[in-house]
Image (cartoon, rainbow, N blue to C red):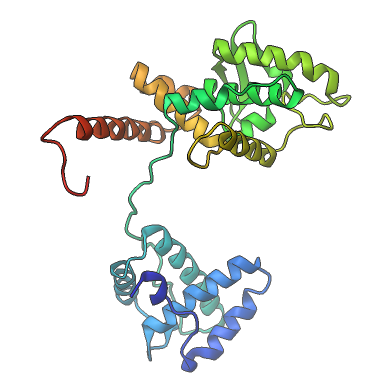
Length: 306
């Protein structure tokens, strides 16, 4: 039985009244949150069987988590489920005086394997940013893509960038990252040239008073969603064999700079990561690339499951 099939969607009839009361309690929540919580609490009721779920002990909750993990639920799914169960116990404690503590308090789900970010190869990245065309939108997109790949900016940083924060003569941009923290990021030659060409065109189509570096047809700031759509559309037109999103250009920047320089601290600074641990994931990307080359080239390297 799959993990998805194993998840209950309706509580046992013996506990229906409590479940319905919790559903009423969740009414103000967003529909997707409410439905997810109810589904997860129904699973708790199913695991409890005949035992009143509001009277379960910590050891029983731990056993339930272990059971679900054994069925194939990931740490991420179990974390979400524990969050729903805690919400239920907060509700139960307000409506049942016999509930004196949350048996889920302090419980942590098993860790899931960390997903490695997807990055383009240097050839794929070069193909994506080398778009051709003299019309205004193509010139804008070329500048946008070159900057994203040159400097590793987040989608929000690209959309929020103002002209006044770009110092092309000095080869740098000032961006506002997470936590409203400002950082200075270097800009490569190709990106500076593309931005300079776009600024000439931008002056002819920007709306009065608009400070955004990247604007749409009406001269107003380009939205993050619009940037996502432009990247995906151009990736298809350029013949890239997978879905490409703006953050993939950030991942590609980090991976390629790290491959060339080996300077983890410098990459951390340019990406604006608060912790070096966030940047270290790119060292795993490098090893993956090396492992593929090794497996393809070494006659004794081909291993099962590689």
